[in-house]
Length: 113
Length: 113
Image (tube, rainbow over all chains, first blue to last red; front, side, top):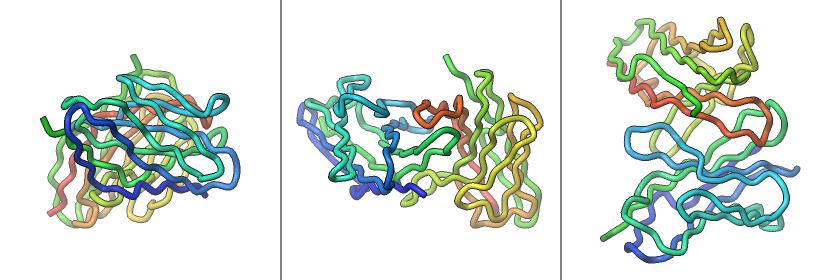
């Protein structure tokens, strides 16, 4: 079965700084990869996903992620964070049709003014 | 806009009691999922379903049952609730392909005393 590791439980950055949230997956085949965001007391919303083609995928609100197969990674990046980006970010992996996605433990991002 | 609703939004139960969490989706999605969210564990998959009448065990099914009586509805049942089942429960729906986005409900906060 597939699995996801998000090694950083909490990340704090200053507003305007760049951001990288790390995600590594475990799966021998070609995965489908996702980043979701969870704002306080809400469900998860999709930020971006990768399933084929260009390994750099663009998402909403200036987020992007790069699929690096050799490193089994799918790190999330943003060039300049805003205070409203404070949230919990989840990486998820799926593997084929009708496969239930598995999620990492999440990274709580705090953006300092 | 995909819509997933959950009820109740908050629940206090007693140890040994029966708890039913309900989920409804108006997206006509084949697949539905139940996850629980706990600090340090992220989202863990409890049960999922491929369509009406189908239920499948996820990664942590012990102590939980699921029911999918129709395309729209998917319930999670705790026959004998225990304090270790205190958590936030999320329901999600999706079309079913590996690369498809999941749409999440707002969550149910369950406290078992």
